[in-house]
Length: 180
Image 1 (tube, rainbow, N blue to C red):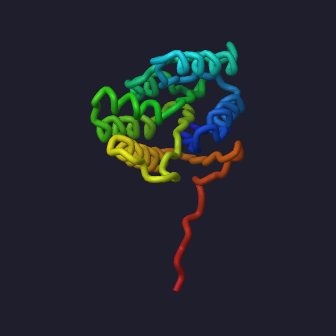
Image 2: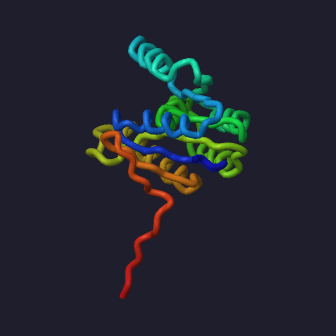
Image 3: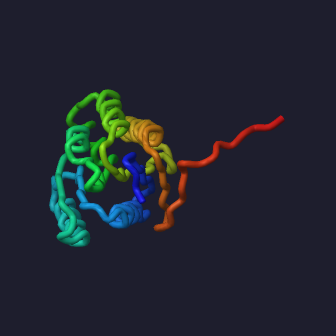
């Protein structure tokens, strides 16, 4: 059961993270709000968005927001509903292309999450486990995504990593110790 704090679900592309997050929200038994951060900028993305909406079905309310995630979370997170944000990676990409201050936007999102009035699940890609990107923009994005994920993991009550559709609980956990 989800509490009033946030849960972060991480994973690679097509790892099953969104499906896991949706099931987590469905188990809450509360009204389901899906916050979509992706924009239909081309036919392929429009088709993906349509397929995702169809797959979720009519029991989900969808809110599309590409930039002002903090405001949506503050408005929509309440005890009678569970909010699913999918995904932080697209939100970060939107911030990059809108030339927004990533540090400020991340800090504001962390502040909103720390004071949640209801449960929230956030989905984000883990992009730093592969090869070093070839160009400067891609490296900058990878680094920003890594920092965003770290910041989100600090403020979230629970962090789950999904690989091949299988969840691995990262937080809460017991920290390793070095003993003499």
